[in-house]
Image (cartoon, rainbow, N blue to C red; front, top):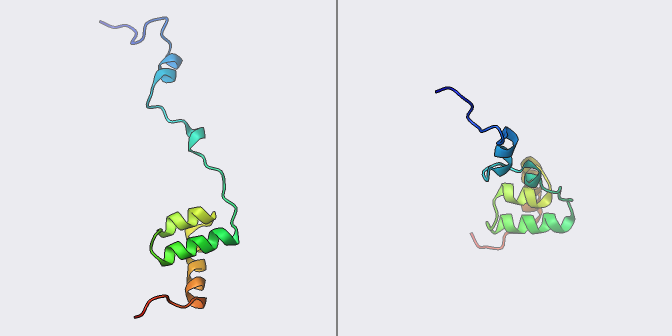
Length: 85
């Protein structure tokens, strides 16, 4: 009952080329985002109005989450609230 799993004309490489579930790692990489004042302003406004979460805003600006958090704290320090407490 022993024998090869694949026929002789069907190579191991052919199997992986045909696999629809194979991950294309080159397609997963994204272009780096340049941090601009416009991107940071938009991210801070969207964070303040709770339209975005911190990871989404940091990715939009091209910053780490820690950098975005520090930037947002500065934004809160120097911008008045728009609601009545």
